[in-house]
View 1: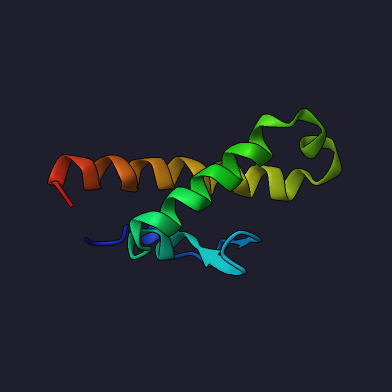
View 2 (view 1 turned 90 degrees about the vertical axis):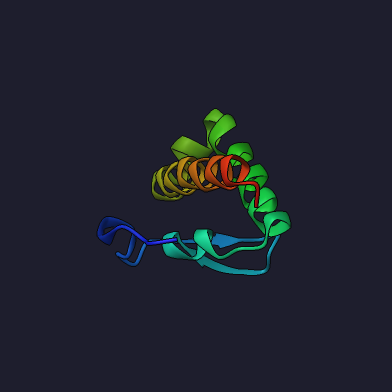
Length: 81
């Protein structure tokens, strides 16, 4: 899958569930189980209003990662991957 240029910018999320940093472009290559964990972790961050006030940068980055992960997941489902 070709990675759009705007997603090649170094934007990373530190995933505690995966135990490592995940960059936006990494989402295209993550195994489905790891992608599911990232979506769950970022959704949890975004759903807690206190996270926004505690760490606005992490809250925003979690939003970018979550939305792109949803797109990657949807494309995989459409392509039968």
